[in-house]
Length: 110
Image 1 (cartoon, rainbow, N blue to C red):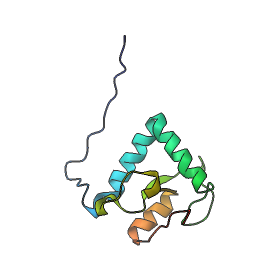
Image 2: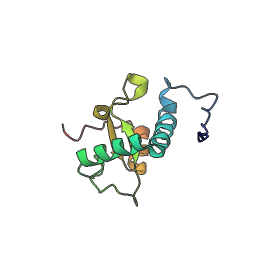
Image 3: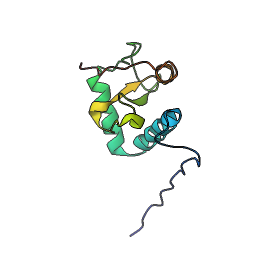
Image 4: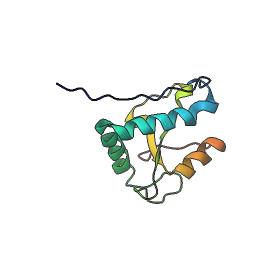
């Protein structure tokens, strides 16, 4: 039986999961990992359906062309979990604005 080799990306030496400055770095890692496995793709599809295919920040459609990032409503550095109830899909630019301007994102169903 052959076992496929899976390479893992090392975490940056100075990256700290409890530092708000590193939040986007860890969310990007999570997005990459999720895109690489079927469970992650199913999770993203569930979020997309729950949001009616729209970004909760700009209310525009999210699709393969516009791309997306997963965002933790309660940031992980503040105790947020990797559960569907704490995640939303945002456009990459909307995600950068949320973090740089420290905007609050509400759950689509709330």
